[in-house]
Length: 145
Image 1 (tube, rainbow, N blue to C red):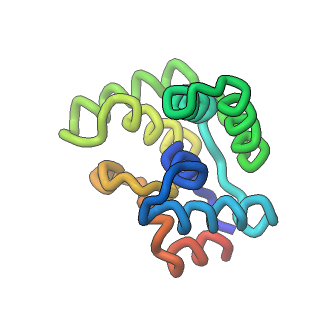
Image 2: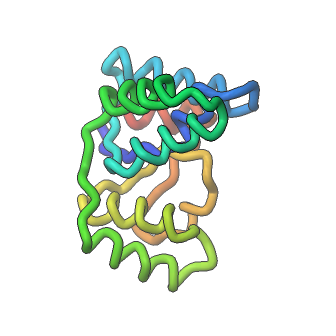
């Protein structure tokens, strides 16, 4: 199985309103629940997901439960000072991604994870990190082999 890091957006789209990415992201989450996909994530994903869900719904309990459910599907990596420092350098060196996503890229690179499952094309410019689009079924299938 190929190691990959989840981007928060996968979970946001999976639980969100109708959108072209909702069904592909729901399929990814379903496959993660079944054990077919085993992704990894930064612990920062949990607070970002809870924050986003609370802002959208105003339901604090549901936001926390959504983040906990996502945590159960991932191997979690704590955010280390060197991740933030490396992320800031990635941010400085590239127009995209923004600072938060640059830190996420640094988490992946610092743990020798070569792929990120994300809808965000900003990751396409990060050297050493391949973005897998959740809507690309063949690419998602490749993560299982």
